[in-house]
Image 1: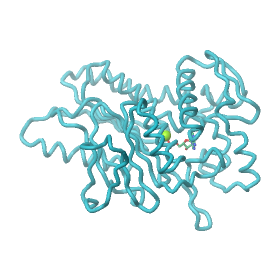
Image 2 (image 1 turned 90 degrees about the horizontal axis):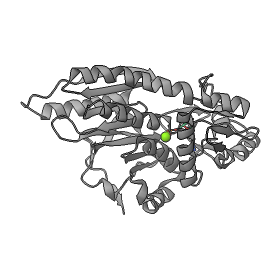
Image 3 (image 1 turned 135 degrees about the vertical axis):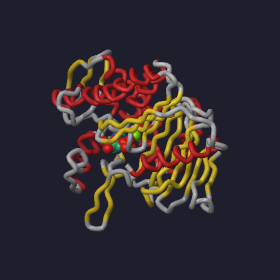
Image 4 (image 1 turned 90 degrees about the vertical axis):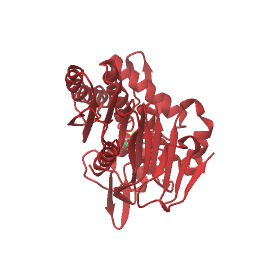
Length: 343
Ligand code: AMP
Ligand code: MG
């Protein structure tokens, strides 16, 4: 919610800067899906295009949730988790194939079979608990995306393996919604899918890029930086987004597939910008698990994935990749912070 306000304030600030030039009126609306509030801002000269797209956006996200959510009882994923085998629709098969590809590319830092561990920590029902070391060891053994067999629309999972697309579903939705917006002739929109997945369609109506805030993980009510986006998406994964505290220790929802426990890589948040929202979502989770050094190396090794990153360490150090030059700036109140540029 705070993040949304952050984005809205930045957008408003820019509108004010546009000065006397009369900007078209935005159509803004909100929907609740995927466990979060989503906020859409559309600019269209043709009211009809906006009217057509509005129900598509809200309906599109909830339709996706109905097939992809592990906690939605009738979804393809929930059914597979229950039965271990079965057929899925073309869309689920496509998301699964893309997600498994990214699990592979990230060397298993992203692993869609972390679900039994996610449940054991109580993150699905928000009934949190700390599993014992023996339990974690057993859970970690079962996390293995390579064990998922996907052939056409037929999927099978070994005993005890369950899937969860929580790390990529919002990104997938972001790309689909952006496509629907463009297909209806709207060339300027900001689709905020909540919990830090945002897709910018085109630029602002005045031609300047959208300016989106990056949340300060140490003070989630504030943004420490602004990234300019034009036909780009951005996604953030951070320990501050979902966590619980027990006996003075903080446990967050991003798990290290090797240990089945919260990933403690020294990072507080990872923000990824890319033309693909799916990549932003999946890679922000994966790079959070990898940590700064391995994450930066992954960025160097994969120019073909076309993404840029902002890392914030638990000590509050800020690192950004060189490709964000000219598109990244520190926010008001953070101007004196050092930013290390990764080459
Ligand atoms: P995100 O908020 O996009 O970083 O995704 C985190 C969500 O994905 C968690 O709430 C879990 O449901 C799931 N998850 C946690 N750790 C991982 C992981 N290493 N790989 C894939 N999914 C994960
Ligand atoms: Mg993610």
